[in-house]
Length: 120
Ligand SMILES: [Zn+2]
Image 1 (tube, helix red, strand yellow):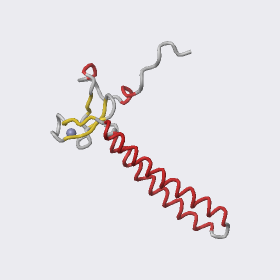
Image 2 (cartoon, rainbow, N blue to C red):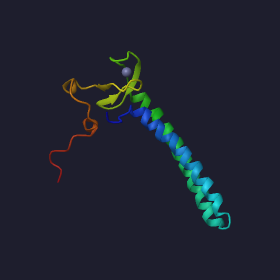
Image 3 (cartoon, rainbow, N blue to C red):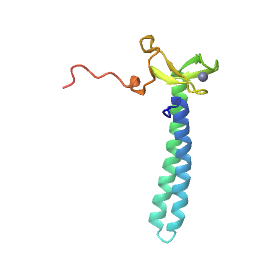
């Protein structure tokens, strides 16, 4: 099975990893103690990663309000879904908002906006 995850969970783990990346970058700066400028660059990059993570967390908050709460038909738990297709956050059951996609195999490409017919 392909490692699809519920979108909100996926963004949340991305934000969490950004914090770790930021901390690691700042930690790496310690190895450049002799060069203050390089150390400063690492520190700034680390802080930027952590700020980025905060922004992503705020973004999740906005997304969550737009996400549609649904009850998973497979495990019965409530989950929030984004876009036309998403996965249950608890059991990874594929969920769809589009009746025409019901029963079809889960495919993330359904989320991509349809190509414009007359694009250049
Ligand atoms: Zn479920």
